[in-house]
Length: 271
Image 1 (cartoon, rainbow, N blue to C red):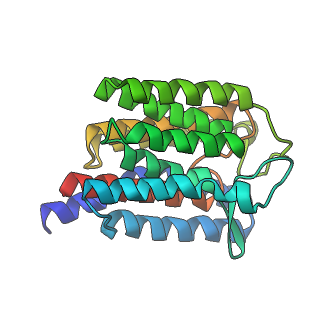
Image 2 (tube, helix red, strand yellow; image 1 turned 90 degrees about the horizontal axis):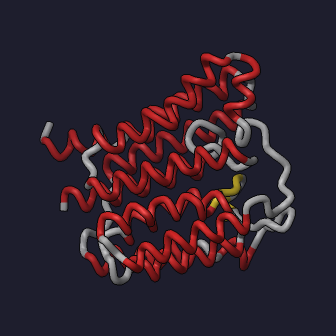
Image 3 (cartoon, rainbow, N blue to C red; image 1 turned 180 degrees about the vertical axis):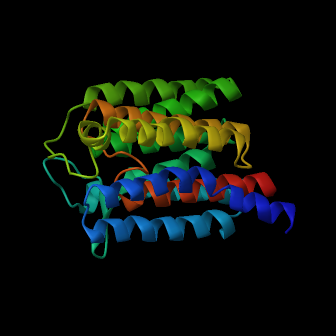
C-alpha cells in the first residue's frame, strides 16, 4: 500500500469514529430503522469519498468551487421549504439535507488558502446563513474564521469572524422549530438514561474527532484546526439550544459535509 493511499484512509478516522458512536446510540435508544439506515448510508458514502474522492488542486478551481458552495447556501432561502420562519434545508428525494452542515465545511476548507479571496467568499456564506437563519452555523463559521485570522494574520478573516459571531448572537433563538428526537438534545437524552454513555458519546464528538483531525488525519494544520473548531462549536451550540448534534445524532448532512471537507483538505495535502 502506497503512503498516499494509506493517508487517504486515515482521512476517514475523524468522520468514522464519532459517526459509528452515533449509530450505536441510535440503535441502543430505539431510533427508527429508517434513521439508522440513512446515517449508515451517509457514513459509507462519506467514507468512500473521503478516502478516494478528488477535487481540483488548482487555486482558481478551488475558489470557484468555494463560490459555488457559498451560492448554494442561498438556495433554501429561495426555494424552501420554510418551517417556523426557518429555511435551512435542501430537498434530496425522500430526505432533507441541512444546507449549512452539508456545504459550510467544504466552503471553509476551500476558502482557507486565500487571504484575499477567502474572506469575501466566507462573507457571502455569512449572509446566506443569517437569512436562513442559522446561529449554530454562524458560530461555527466564526470559530473557523478566527483560526484563519490567526494563521494568516489577516484583517479580512478577522472581520469575517467578528461579523459571523455578532450575527450568531443576534440570531440565537430565532425560529420556532420543535426539537427533533435523535437529532437535537442527544446528550441530554442519553444522560437521563445512562450518564457514562453520554460522557463517552460526548468524548467522541468533543475530544476524539478533533484529536483525530489534528493528529491522525494527514491534513494541513490550518484546515485541520479550522474543521476541529467548526465541529466543536457546532457541538457546543447543540448543547446550549435545540440545534442538531453533528455526527453523533441523526442527520446525513454533517456526515457528508465533513467527508467533502476532508477530501478537499486531503487533495490539497497530496497535490
